[in-house]
Picture 1: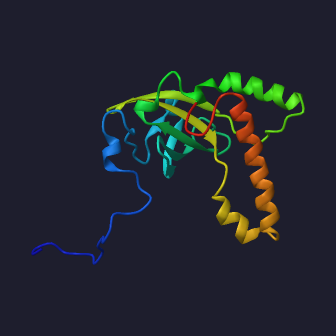
Picture 2: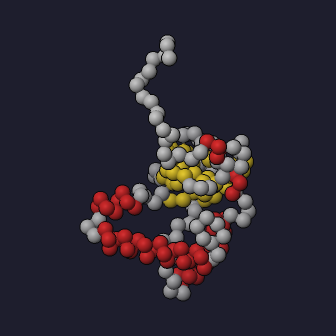
Length: 179
């Protein structure tokens, strides 16, 4: 390439861990830019991408509605094609009631994380149901094996909590990935 100065960087393979570009077509993901704001009165400002799955992207946001204290949240934005009225996560209020009854009856699923807020984003690829969750921390593997004095025991405890949470969700007709 003559006349173009190179910085010496090049890309040999497609980066791992990225969603496909064709997922940003109608029915797919909503395009996000750092600094975008969402929610009532632009309450959540996007500051970093946390990850993605088969049907959603998750973004670290600053809750700018909380002026007195800086609070960070995770904004999960579903693909338009999965943003239907049948979305199990929209059953949050009835799940909270069932969860409270479950705990009152001696059940154990304290590890269920309920959304703090939810709303729709209307974009070029469709309407996207979006949920705001607390930021829960780094990957388990990053913290568990670097800090724990007994990672085997801690991993067993964590596995038990996940099993209890999934059992509760199954009792409500919900499993990972849908009904």
